[in-house]
Amino acid sequence: MLPQIPKPEDYDVSPVLGFLPTELPLEVLPDTYYTPWETIAKNLQGLILSRRMRGVVERLPILSTEHLRSEPEWRRAYSILAFISHAYIWSGDRPMEVCRQRL
Image (cartoon, rainbow, N blue to C red; front, side, top):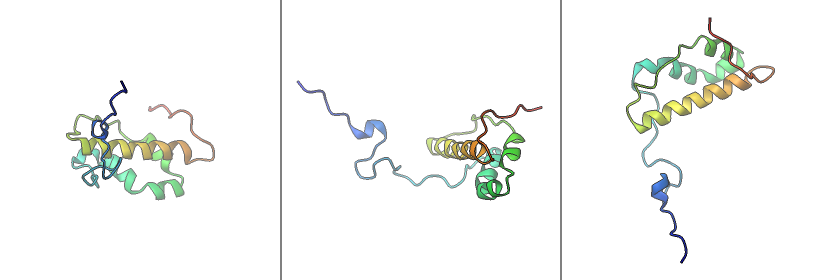
């Protein structure tokens, strides 16, 4: 007997949209607590081009995820943090291997 074929829906894959969500992603996190993340995301290109990205990230407060209330908010948060992390690592003359310690 052949194994049962998995259902795409069990893996958040739509038969119509594939890996795209059925609802549009959030454009901004609704809780203002996350404004520091949103501000960096909004200014990402300028921060990279002006070579200020690493300094801004190093001064960024450590925020809790306790204010994220829904899956779309979690998706927005991890997308923003992935962009910030990538930009932090690759925005200098050499890739950053370790985030500098906070004083």
